[in-house]
Length: 465
Ligand SMILES: [Zn+2]
Ligand SMILES: [Zn+2]
Image (cartoon, rainbow, N blue to C red):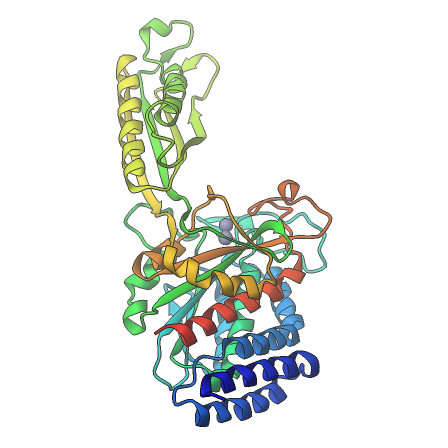
C-alpha cells in the first residue's frame, strides 16, 4: 500500500469512526492525533485533514449552540448604538481573554480585536462581526425584547438589534471558542474583528471627512498590526432557515448620501409671480432626477437607485418659502456608474433650478463602497459553505443594502455571505426585513453561522499555500 493509499484509507476509517461513534471533542482530538501521527510516519508532509477538522467543528458548534443563543439574547436585550457599544465590547473582550487570545480594545472607539496565534507558521484569516444596533423601537413581544434607550445624534431614542448584529457577535464569540479549543490542529493566525458602528455613527452626522467603523479601524492601523490574507463575514437576513447565500463580485451596493438645497425668493402665496418658488422647483427637480437612472444609466452594465427620502420646506399655506432642503440616497455597484449618476444628479438639479430662476446646491457624501466578493476566494470557499450549511447554499441576488465590510474587502480578498433566519413555514419574502421593528431571527440558524465562520477560517488556514 502506498503512503497515499494508506492515508486515504485511514481518512475513511477515521471519518466512519467519527460519524458513528463520537460526539465529544476530546475523544475526537485524541483519535485525530493518533491517526495523524500515523500519517506523519507514512507521509513526510501531512496534508490538511479538512474533513476531520470540519467534523470536529460540527460537534463543537452543536455543543456550543445553547451558549451562543444565550449570548445573542443577552446582547439583544442590551443593544447599543454605533460608537456606544461599551457593554457589548466588554462582554466580547472578556470572553476572548478567557480563551487566551491576544486582545485589543477601544479600536475605532469601541471595537475589539482578538488574535489567536497558533504558534505554527501559516496564513492569517480575518473574521468580522459587527456589534451595533439601530435607533428602532422593538415591537415583537420577545421575552428578551429590548427596552433600551440611548442618545442618537443628541436625541434620546429607542434602540433595537433590528439588523441581527447581536447574532453576528454571538456567532463569532462561539467561533472564537471553537477555534481556540482546536488551536493545536491549526496553523497561522485567526483575527477576530468585532467592529463597532457598521450602521454609521451615533455621536455625529457623517460629513464625508469624519470616520467611524471599519474605515476608522483600518486608519488606526488594524491591518498594520496583523494583515489577514482573506476576510470573511456572515450576515443574517430573511431567507430559508440556515441557508447560506453568496454572490461573487459586487454583492452589496455603494451608498452615497445626497443633500439638495433649492433656494428661491420668498413672498406671498397669493402673488407667486413676485416670488421664485422653491417648492414647485423641487417638484420638477425630483421628477427630473428619475431620468438619471431611467434615461442616462446603462442598466445592462449594472443597476442604480436614486431615492429622495426627505423633503422639507415652508411654514404656512400662504407663504412661498425661501428654500427647500431634501435628502436622499444613491446606490450603485460600479465605479463608473457611481460617477455618472453623481454627475448627472448635480447637472439635472442645478439646471432645472436654473430654469426656474432658483439655485440648487447639491452635496454628495460618499458613505460606503460596494462590497465586492473576491471571485477566486468565493469559488474556492464554495465547497466549504456547502458542507457547513449541509448543502443549503444558493447564489444570491444583488443587495440594495450597503455595508462597510467593503472597507476590509478593498484591502484583502473578502467574502461576505448571508444566512437565512426565517422560521420554517413562513415565506421569507413576506418576513419583516432587516431594520424593521418586527425583524425576527430564528435562533436555529445560529449554529449554522457559527459552523460556517469556523469552517471558513479553519479551511482557509489549512489549505492556503
Ligand atoms: Zn443594517
Ligand atoms: Zn447589518
